[in-house]
Amino acid sequence: MFQCPVCGELMEALTNFHCLTQHHLSKHEVIARHGAAKYVAPRMNREVQQWIRNAQIISRSDFDIAQSAARNQVSH
Image 1: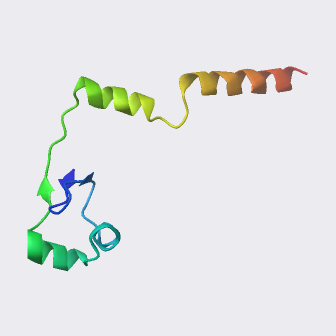
Image 2: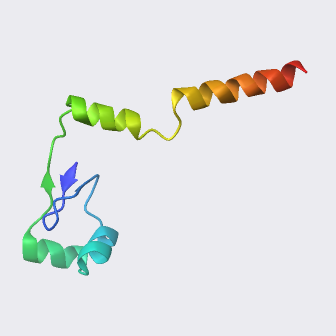
């Protein structure tokens, strides 16, 4: 992961879109003024793992309910 040199946001890559929308500068201007994005090796601590579980789009119960409904429709 890379860290924006201006705001510190973590992202897969420093993009021109991020630089323009967040800082009103092109990617090249951000790098010229603030330096290149810093590579950060993320550590999977308990808080990060909990956030990943909570941020999932489909929870296990959502999946189970959908599967049950599909089985009921097929059996009728």
